[in-house]
Image 1 (cartoon, rainbow, N blue to C red):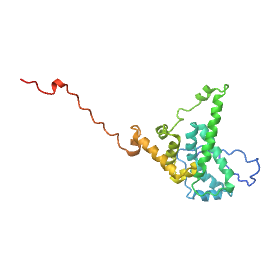
Image 2: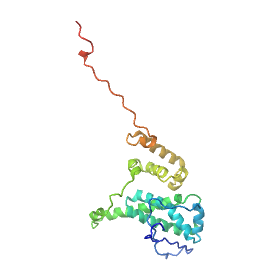
Image 3: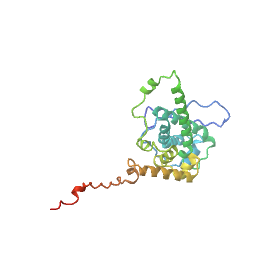
Length: 238
């Protein structure tokens, strides 16, 4: 692995789909800023190999998609440690799906709904805990890292409607195609195009964000000519 201290994720494939008993929780190494992805094999091939117990294929999938999973999870949880919990739960979910999974697109397209649902579930639990009178909110706040929070692009689009913001980030941050976005959100591609167009139009109209999309500074304002007092408009007659 890239970091000596990281535990190695293990792949446990079982065909006993009806049994509740499963392998112990999988512990995955934390993502790094520049994940190594030097495996040239396509996602579909790696999934097929991993479904037959090929641990190296599974690790290749993990290295390739872990940063994507964490970035999406962080977007919903706003908490780094919870985003890493989502990472672990997401790949544990993938392990369970491997025996019957037949991938027809990028793995990120398949994983996105799971990441989103897991992250939202964690966030809902946090809200319930926060409403509990016995919860020490001050203690939780004191452990938060100052670096946790929206990344720059998310700060820019935070005021957009949720549907527009989600489509915009999937397109420009996660680099999904319009068809992939339609698939992961279960909406028509026409809706994706409409939301994306509306989001970009809104950001173009805002002077604070216009230059992010077209690189042009806001148009200069036309100076208002000074008002000449009426008595000064004509020279005094002699």
